[in-house]
Amino acid sequence: MTSTVRIELPAHLRTLAGVGREVSVELEGTATLRAAVDALEARYPMLRGTIRDQVTHQRRPFLRFFACQEDLSHDSPDTPLPEAIVLGKEPLIVLGAIAGG
Amino acid sequence: MSSVRVLVGTRKGAFVLTADGKRKNWNVSGPHFGGWEMYHLKGSPVDPNRVYASQTSGWFGQLIQRSNDGGKTWQPMSNKFVYDGVPGTHQWYDGTPHPWEFKRVWHLEPSLTDPDTVYAGVEDGALFRSTDGAQSWQEMSGLRKHGTGPKWQPGAGGLCLHTILLDPENPSRIYIAISAAGAFRTDDGGETWKPINRGLHSQYIPDPNAEVGHCVHHIAMHPSRPNVLFMQKHWDVMRSDNGGDSWQEVSGNLPTDFGFAIDVHAHEPETLYVVPIKSDSEHYPIDGKLQVHRSRTGGNEWEAMTKGLPQQNCYVNVLRDAMSVDSLDDCGVYFGTTGGQVYCSADAGDSWNPIVRDLPAVLSVEVQTLR
Image (cartoon, chains in turn orange, purple):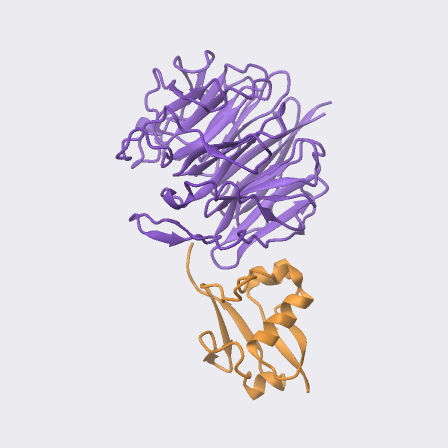
């Protein structure tokens, strides 16, 4: 099964990747958070290490994953994404914590 | 005609300041990487248009950028810094074991002979090297594994490897310094290392002869005399005439010997510059007067350089990598402040002028002399 997942990026990562607010990635098989970030990093290698650790794949502490008004940050990365995300109706949002000056 | 290019890293981006050899009229380019902390930028001595930059963020982690055109355009390079093997632990602030964790790159030191080789000093304290223009990084783990690593403890800024000095006469010799572990030297190209802290005294260490644990803030060397090192320690300005095997204090008549930055005149190996800072609890100049102190005697005898610098209500700091010199005939001296000023002296410190006044807090200043 192939799905097209929309991913919304925070401003600094848009600049880094040279993209607009949202990008789309094609996923094969079950659409999970891990598969989405894998595809994002494969398409935009400059984002490697900015969302999750390159070795442990731990989410960076000041970033969160939201979808359909739900916080997916603490879910297993292998949990299937919500249907609205898989169908492309809603974006998967990578959100930076509001902190700092 | 000669010109200079000043690479400035700030809390919110990088700036490139350029001028001809007179150093009066400046062009300011930036911010590059606006909003990101730019810890350090440095150009290759072999190919000055090859510039490496450390870009970091509490949100998005570490990036390494490379320019091949002197900072006009940039491309992201590898940011994969992985410790060699199982990294184990160093000490935390309370003395308990703490796992080694990569946080950021504090300092980038391009090779003296190969534009594709560059060293990176990182937090938590380790040294990495790239030999392919920053496309990949390998830890020089002989440093971290030489034996004292588990005793290293972070300074207030973190366990940062902030100083890398390459010996121009002996390619196998490298000096590095870590807060608050101390200074270390390799004589075999990085395979093995030894602490070089004999003669340093730090009040906060129970054992005054401790091999490690000294909060070295910065070390400077004149390329014509790589055995002579000058150190700004947490407190104390120190000198070594034997490649760090032993150190003597040369604070002399400084009004305070606390500080961060230290550098050496480009043509006078006995002329040094420091910026005295009031104390470790008050990181600003004494009495609101910003002064660079110059010694023409290799230390001990210092004179205050104040012309053109604010002499009232100035409470900025000058961080460890925020001072540099050019190598024009009249040696230029540069430093940046946490208040966002970058000052230039085109007469070896006698007088100063601000190049810019209102940048974000300056983290690093490096100067390239272009001929």
